Amino acid sequence: MFVGHYGISFAAKRLDKTIPLWVLFLAVQLLDLGWGVLVPLGVEKVRIVPGITASNPLDLYYMPYTHSLVAALLWSLAGYVVYRSGRGFGASRRAALLVAAAVFSHWVLDLIVHRPDLPLYDDTLKMGLGLWNYPTVAFLLEVAILFGGMLLYLRSTTATTAVGRYGMPVFGSVMLLIQAAAFFGPPPPNDRAAAFTALASYALFAAGAGWLDRRRA
Image (tube, rainbow, N blue to C red):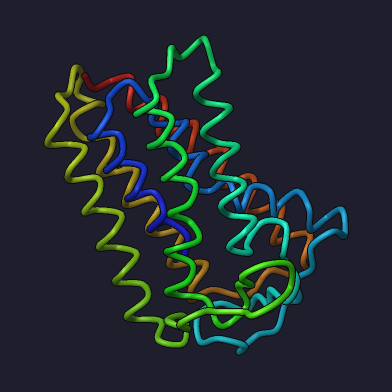
């Protein structure tokens, strides 16, 4: 899953408005941020295999440090500790728990769409329900989660500028176009390109979300 993860960010923001939206955008993609760093370093492995699923050409055959269930729980714990100890945020326990839940939500949503490449621990007992083999259904699920979460966010906040009123829906539509390109466009040329593209996308999305969030109250 890609942009659907951000629906969780919007929903979590509604539950605790003290958490900056950009933090939640990074939290829901923290496992993939780690993956994007570890793949170019050769620690985790991915192959480009067009057709391995109907909508995603990535053969994610070795990623125990970011996408195993045990690793996801540890990353979630790290998210809790880092956010809770961040004095600049004045984070409450509730806020830190929401950040940790946002981190872990990545693994749960990935379980729905991935082929069996998510290990329970290390590189063992891999799981995945394989919705990526049904691209239309998988794409509609991304749409539903993204805009469902965004609707909750918009209903719980108020625009302070014209950009704040219309910016988020436009932003969501742009994210959806990028998702469509990833689903139905050509595959990345190699593993490093896939990793660097992912990292750049996550950084830009977090920056955009943070900028627009400051135009709502």
